Image 1 (cartoon, rainbow, N blue to C red):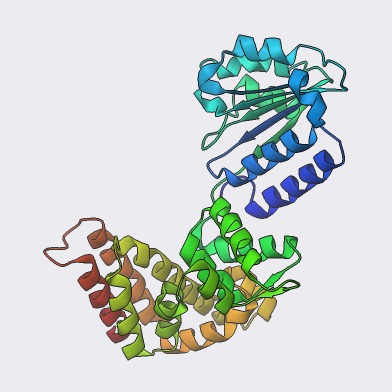
Image 2 (image 1 turned 90 degrees about the horizontal axis):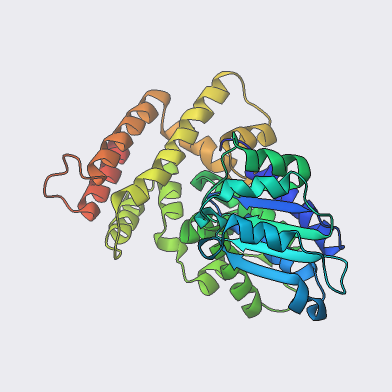
Length: 346
């Protein structure tokens, strides 16, 4: 991930949320990035905490970029609050505003009695231009970049820790596979699940995920990679056939996590060649929970370096086929079964 890591973004957002819930606000917030979860979270918290309900009629302006001009936003922001300490101006979907950069004129000298929130969903301000630079000096910028697939399980564990919960590493991996990289969806699924769990639950198991999120560990990519690690050939082929038969299955959906898995095995070979690292260090370098190191210890034995390199090449070939290149008449399901068979026999 370029720029800030998700860990830094999460830490920054937690600090902002703590401030706004304590009544501490900056004059300008520029909330932006491809991943909308954190910008939306900060925006919602500001709207909820900035004004008392009875103050909102005269002091809260919420508009959308496509419906307003920079001039109208600046005019609203330069008003003084009525019978309140501050006023709030929120521009949602700000990336749709024509002349958005013109807001920099206000952001260079914002009023202390106005809280201006500029929310860009799925987009970012140009860091070379005046708006970004002026907010950087006078306010707060939250940039939320998308997480990669391999980062999701760790993010889920941190998210649950923030809720005062533990989640089993295998449960986090399964939830990640089910939901993907949509952080907002993970939050929604978590809220739904917690309502169904017994009061006082402090640890979420893989069975909780299966039961409440509606995903089966038995026929998941997570279970497929595990079977490949331990060379459970018959089961791996059975899981591959089941995954391939799913509605709207596309081969790249399977190839990407398989590539990540074997790239980690390849990386582990390189680490071990320099001498066995401490478990915590090895897990950090591989980007996995230490719980899974036992599996990777087995995988490096089952897939020697040269064999692992051949599988990486094989995965690149099938990624190309899955995207329409030289696949012939073979269905995505047949290609997945063929790929798994070649991995097991490579």
